[in-house]
Image (tube, rainbow, N blue to C red; front, top):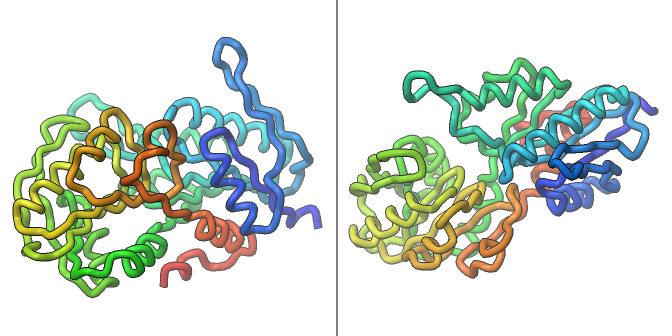
Length: 314
């Protein structure tokens, strides 16, 4: 029946991930032309019939964030005007997520602005993964399915890191996430006490917890300039840790991140393919990429079939 057709589209942010997801779904990636005019304006043309369809648009809003966000918005508008029945924005990485509250006078809550843009243009459901702050779900007046890369990262840790480990949160904000990992791995938890002077500049202060003689695994939702992780690794080794590894869902890896990682005491950094690695990041031998395409494909299929998504994590 036409009303039950599922179609998957993708912008230019991460077409490789979209192809992998379609491979697991057993359907081809649907056709859409997303290009730019000479002045930089974005042009979108949907290449097939979507009338009455259940449409999923895979587009992490990673760097260049504004370009990829506008691609998503314009694609959704084109699909809505082509009479798609329901449009789900699949955002493995949600850009602007760090601006989720007012931390100073006269600053915006940009994560909310992005949510409103998506709703106004015609998104009727959002599928996101490891949001920087859980409250971002509340910025939407539509259903938000929040996935976690934890099953993929946990499997890697169990299979690849054999020594006695301790999970470490690089700041107080990540304690809940790190505690959940520690519980599933049946290990201890430590916290880095960190003082942040300004955005993208962090100074690690000291370790709360006993890491002596253990393999420390730093866990975060994203790695941007890698300043926090590299400083935390030095502090952990100074506190007696044997080795330091790092895991995160989103490898933003901007600015001096790769140079810092190469020079750091971190043995390896595990990221997912929610954001594609480009340039120096793609060739960095310290970075290990895990695929979340199967997880996203399963969630998409469950949404399409109106099944439970939360049961993926039970």
